[in-house]
Length: 74
Image (cartoon, rainbow, N blue to C red; front, side, top):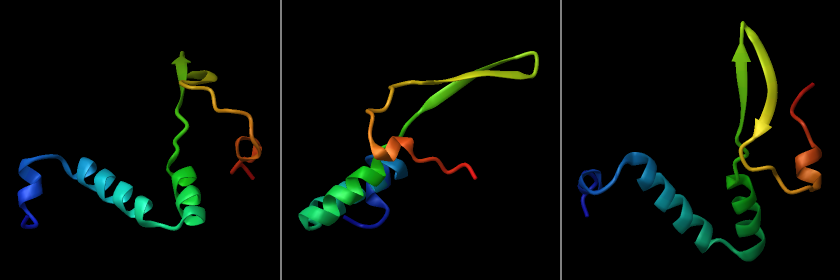
C-alpha cells in the first residue's frame, strides 16, 4: 500500500486510530495497560444561557478511581 492509497479507503483520523491500536497491541503488558489508560477520554458538556455557564454534566460518568479524583486545576 503506497502512502496515498489509504486515503481512498478511510480518513486520516481513522488511519491514526488503526496505527495507535496496532502499536498498543505490540507493547508489553505493563506498557500496554498504561497506554490504553491514556487513550480513555472523558466527555462532559455545559449548557450556557444568557452568558452564564450551567453545571457541567458527564456524557458517561467516569468510574470512581484515584485517577478521576486528580485535577489539572491549579
